[in-house]
Length: 378
Image (cartoon, rainbow, N blue to C red; front, side, top):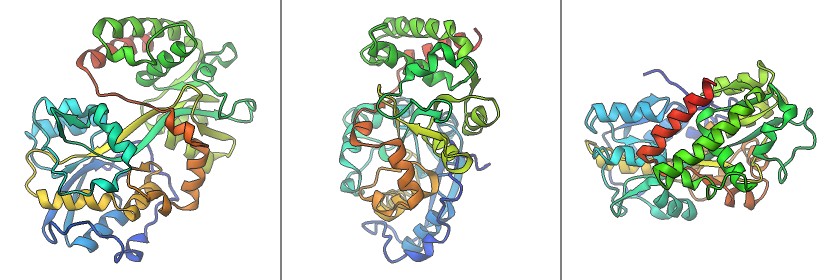
C-alpha cells in the first residue's frame, strides 16, 4: 500500500540511527514471543524504519507493515476481511464503536501487556471515549494530539496563549484569512458559542446527547458559520491542504492539527504559532488494538509492549510530532520536539482543558455529514 502520512511527518526530527544506539535498552516486555512475524496496519508515519528495526532487533520478530491514511480506510479494510489479515492496528479511540458492532477486535488481556506503562490519566480517560465495550477493553492508548489554533504572530501580534479564542476566526476583520476543516470547526464553534452563552450545548456534549439535541446544536452553529462564510480563505482535509492554506492561499489564522502549526513554525517561518485556545483544544487519542482474526497474538502483545517503552515512545514522538502515551517518553524527546511541546502546551492547564473527541454515535456521524455539506455548499 502507498505510504500515506496521517497529517505530516515533521521532517528533520526522525532519528534514523537511533535503533542501532539503543538495542540493549529497548525490550518488548514479558517475552511472550521471540520469533515469528507480526502484521501491523498503521497510519503512514507511525512505524518508521528506526522503530521497526529496533523492535526486530530486540525481539527477533519480523514486522510486516501495511499503512493507511484514514480511520475509514482502516475500518473498511478490516471489515472486508472479517477481522483477519492483521495482528495490530491503530484506531482512533472514538471510532471504537464502529469496530465493536461487527466483532472486528479481540478483547485485550491486561495480563499480557504492561498497563503501568501507559500514562494513567490517558488510560482512564480512554474508557469513556470508546476504548471499552460491555466491560471489556479493546483499545490501548498509543499516542495523542490536538487540533487548535495556528496563526501569524506578525499580522496578529496581540494573539497569545491565554487569550486566543476560537472566536478570533469569526471576527469581521478576518475576511478571507481563515483556514478550517469543516467536520471539526463546527464542533469547536459549538464549544465557543456555548462558552459565550449564545448557543448552550454543555461544551458541545449535547451533540452526543440525543438526535434532537445534536440537530439543534448543529443547525445553530452551521447557520452562524454560514453568516460569516466570507471569513473562510481555505478549507482543508489533510496536512498538505492545511499547510498550503497558510503558505499559498493567504490565510493568517485557522484551526489545524498540531503538526501543521508546529511544522510551519519550524520549517517555514517562526512567525507561525500554534497553541490551545482559551476554550480548550480538540484532543484525539490513537490506540493499538488486536483484531479478532489475529493469527500472531503473542507477537502482537510484544509489539504493543514495545511501543509503550519510554525509549520507543520517545522515538515515535520525535519521528511524528505526536505525543506518546508511554510513561516517561518525554524523557527521550529531542530538543526540537521539546520546543514544539512547550509552544503548544505552555502549562498544565492547556492539557487539563482539552476537549477529547467522545465515542461516535450513529446519529452524530450522519448529522455531522449533513451539516458539513450544508456549510461547504453555502
